[in-house]
Amino acid sequence: MSTKGIHAESNNFFRYLYETHGPGGFITIKLTLTAVLLIAVFIIYRQSNGGSYWMTTGWLVALCMGGIMAITANLQAVMGLAHMGPTDIILLYFILTILFIQAGDLIDRKKPIFLFNKLHSILPWNHCT
Image (tube, rainbow, N blue to C red; front, side, top):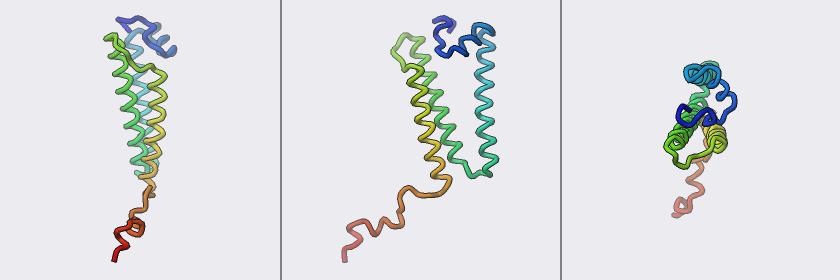
């Protein structure tokens, strides 16, 4: 924001924080929110007694991918290149979050998507005598 100005931040709340508290307050709030999210995931995992390992891992992977997309878009914007808009990144992040959490939940519940034990009866070469 120091090179592009205050309007480089698309989120009005974070723009206000940057205007009132400067870059230090802005970074502090973002780090605090990230820590709160990570603590929430840790609490969910601990309360499930390890039963939601892949679900929480899926959410963390989606969070990392969303962060990487945002960082890439910010770097491309600073360099003057075409970049994804914040709305597109947030939408893609929500889609990834739903997809990875559901996949992790399926793995955690140990319900296979395909029943491989019945696969031998479906395959045509298993019926040859």
